Amino acid sequence: MPDIIDRFRLYPIGLSSDIEKAFLQLSIVPEHRDYLRFFLPTVKETKIYRHCRVVSGICSSQFQLSACIDHLLENSPARFDDVTQKLKHSFYVDNCVTGVSDIQEQENFIVKAIEVMAKGCFNLRGWESNFPGRYISRSSGVTSLLGLLWDLDKDALK
Image 1 (cartoon, one colour):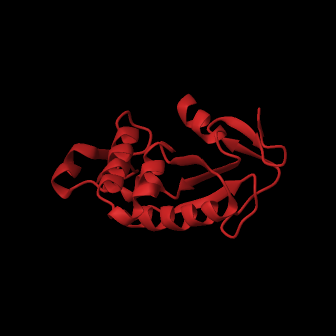
Image 2: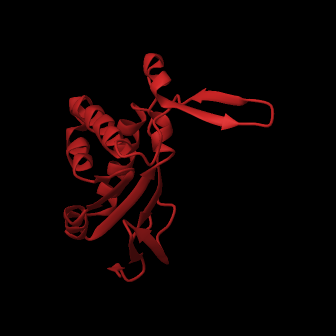
Image 3: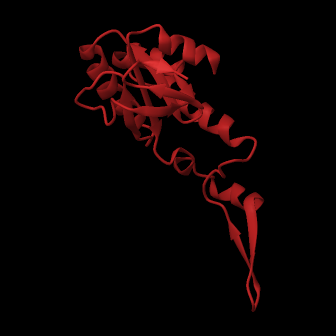
């Protein structure tokens, strides 16, 4: 995580977003669902269910999400190479934290990053930055950034 923060601070414009419902995008193949049973006791009987999606919070779930993102980025079209290289070093679980040099690069990066991640059914959303822009949902106040507080107005981490 410190390396992500270091790279984020190298640029005058910081960007952060997250993947909406990231773990719900990872499905379990039907033949493995029997290994992910859970029981729901009721008054009359105990019902047995099977997980169809990766269970968030188990030890391997973060690894599985990371592996899926890496696979997606490795297999993205060559025209997205600049964005995929940046994205490869910008994710911490389902949070994307990076930086850019100017407003034009900010808008180009966001559009391409959303397109790349959408190929894997991952919706990058909630873009926050210390500079306002067309795709930025928040550019003032204090927000959480990987467990730190980011003052968007002063561009300072606390």
